[in-house]
Length: 159
Image 1 (cartoon, rainbow, N blue to C red):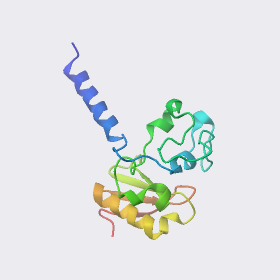
Image 2: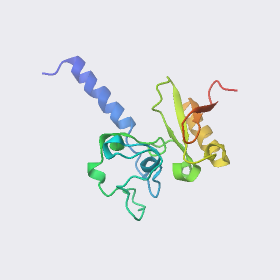
Image 3: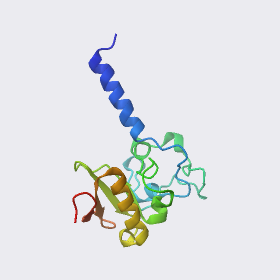
């Protein structure tokens, strides 16, 4: 019989996993920001280069990967905040030019990563960042492109 501690740990892990799952009704569609912007060591993919596993023609079904079922752990373990239900439909990363995530090692802070030079300064990007900051009641660290250096803070406790 499992101990209370191991049972609690399993429940905690299940809750964490659920928090990172896509929200029903949202899929990547034609967005390939994550598949382009981030590096994936297991595939020897450098940052800012489209993944070699991307389909030649982008699909609206959200399965743009030719080997989706076998993608490496970093690729299948990452989900942007939009796919998890934060922000409005029009805040999808490829449409606003920023991808938002919460993988910062800073407590209670989110990260906004621009997908191209100056994308973080567009009206659409600012609205998306402010909207998610309000939804989550968290500060957002807006980064530079392509280095991801902190540029400014938006949200809770920032004037």
